[in-house]
Length: 110
Image 1 (cartoon, rainbow, N blue to C red):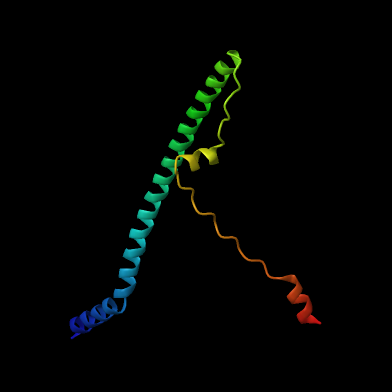
Image 2: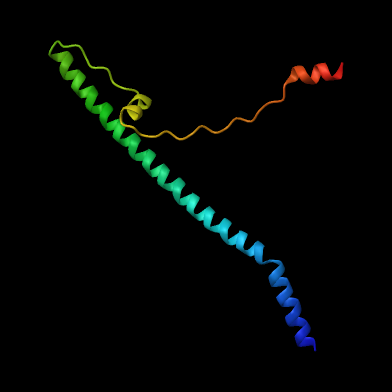
C-alpha cells in the first residue's frame, strides 16, 4: 500500500512539474546558444578592428609616399565609414529606459 502511495505521489509530482522541466531545458539551450552567438560576435568584431587597423596603416604609408612625391594625401576613412563601405552590420543600440515626465507629476499634484 505504501509503495502504491509513493508511486502515485511521484507520478503526480512529475506530471505537475512537466512544464517546468521543459521550460528549464529550453532556457538552458537558449542560454548556451546565445553565449556562443555573443562569442562569435566578439570574434568578428575583433577581426573587423584588426582589418581596419591594417587598412589605416596601409593608407598612412601610401599618404606618406604621396606627400613625398608632392601629391595630396588621400582621406582615411573612420572606422564607422569603413564598416559602411564594407557592408559590415553594426549591432542595434541598447534601448534607453524611459524617464517619467516631471511636468505631468507637478501638474497632477496641483
